[in-house]
Length: 429
Image (tube, rainbow, N blue to C red; front, side):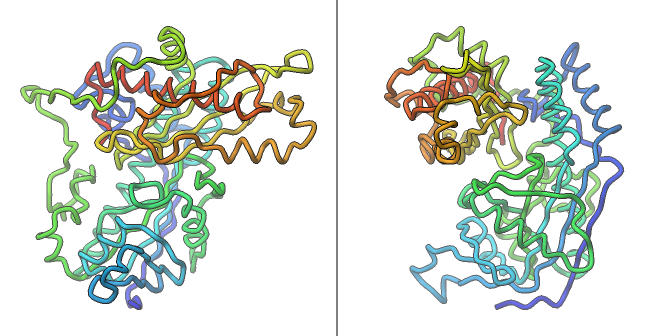
């Protein structure tokens, strides 16, 4: 066990966060080096100004009291367990274990950042008012704020570590490759065990691992005294994924720095079937992709996707209902594996309470809806091979109806990403 001699704890509500334009453009789904103009530029400026006036970003960081992980020399083949114990709490992450072991990490710093609930609430209002463009741009700007907060937290930790002859490793989070998002509630509970500082903002975690507010990120940064190892093992240098321009400790260039105008865009290599045979016509998929889908690329290459389904119950005079589907895909380089899925009623919806199965046993029905995660762990292309029983019922009472809707959601996501592939918009990393 490595006991910690140094100590750091920071809690801040920030007056403002300056998101680099190229990072916002990237999250909007445009290729690197693209310049916004016209309506897109107006919406980008509007989202930035709205958040500057109403957003309340925050971050919290504290160094752990103890860190324990088995080394390969100690456990041999048992290294496959990838177990790490932070302040007595067990986590299982191959990525984190490998980085900590290679760097000789002696400590870790737990970080939580959030864009605040204000943008999320405003985006929800915009969606209800049928303003999908404003909704999408504000959603993406809040995601960009979260990324920038993580970057700023990392830069601040780098400064603290360098002054003490140490170095900070790239951060990792539940939901990243090789770390199950289901461990997120455990990490949140650990981070909330503050010492002298109060946690800046309320945050909750669902059993699935999703956070509320959703524009929140938890992260673990390793700390090592062996700075020379970072020079030999470039994968341990956080600089390539850090956009903090004025940093005086940079060891490597930022890999997403803007291209020069003379630098050509690389030809994309398709990872999705562009000639897919969908169960519904492409015009419907195109309309759903434009009107119901929000795609938010993340800093680790994963993608958070939201789909809104509007339908009606099969009884009670056809009461309107609305459900939100949240899907997390892994990086494009891994062919978009499905990392997490969740379906739940829209926050403002009450129509689901009129479903006949809800009246019979509401807890059982809602638990079934929440637990179903079709094709979880498989690549997105697999949806093209998923044979489902056709069921056009608007309600969620039967498994066949729920599978039918999940199929429509995943096919819409597949269609939308194929269109980005075909247009060359593949810079999700």
